[in-house]
Image 1 (cartoon, rainbow, N blue to C red):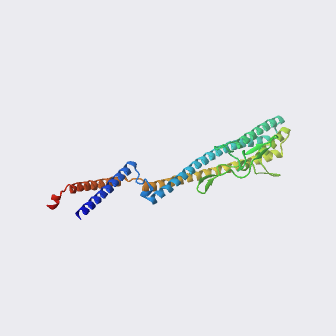
Image 2: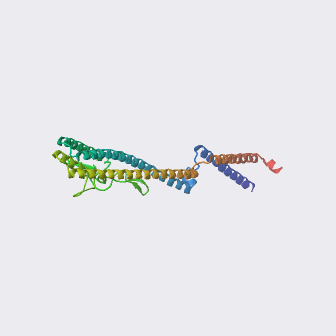
Image 3: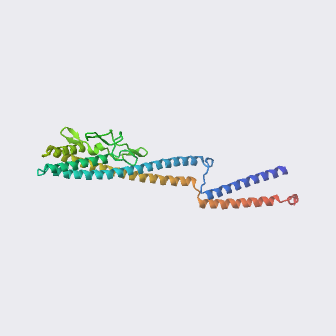
Length: 304
């Protein structure tokens, strides 16, 4: 009976020492690594939540990159539209001059050359590339925004609005406008036309000599209409930029909330851990001391 009791005593004491020693090592590792959760077995629910938080963080990194891309393309579009507006204002001034009945045919020919130069510039701007290498003012389909045939006639390529960029779960932003919306859709006697055709027709009329008549009136109205469309497009781009700012702020807020939750689950509270380490070490030392004293007792000590 005494032998069994002594064996049980030592087994129990050894188990306590192992538990206390293991706990001490665990706390020391938590303090040194800064992490209180390092394996699923330590907290299955918490570890699963950490995986969810990590996936959400990775998704938001992707959304953030898309927001940066969309913002870059929007800025490119706004800068290009500013150049379009400048060209259209020059064209407007030339159209007004061309309408004057005091001009000579040579003067009209000079204005025609300038108008064709503006058409060239507008075509170049319309076919500019964005940060992704695609057409800045392209439609949903097509490799360019506009094309020009051998006769110099400009036509729009593709259909639909520019492809939107996803910037959040279920949220997209169209980063530009189609050339059709900016330069086309202008009223004419035959239905609708575009500013390229109006300016080209006026240039042809001026090169023919004499008063440009109806061609000048149509061009003046069309250029003003195109300027209005450019102004509307720039306003829309500004509004989309504001949406991107809001979306970016929401991502930052979500990231902060997730980081707070992650830290609460995973990170070591150093103050608490240090107190636990001191307490556990004290108990371990006391247990070791008690066991040493009890182990040193002899049978004569026991009988005395």
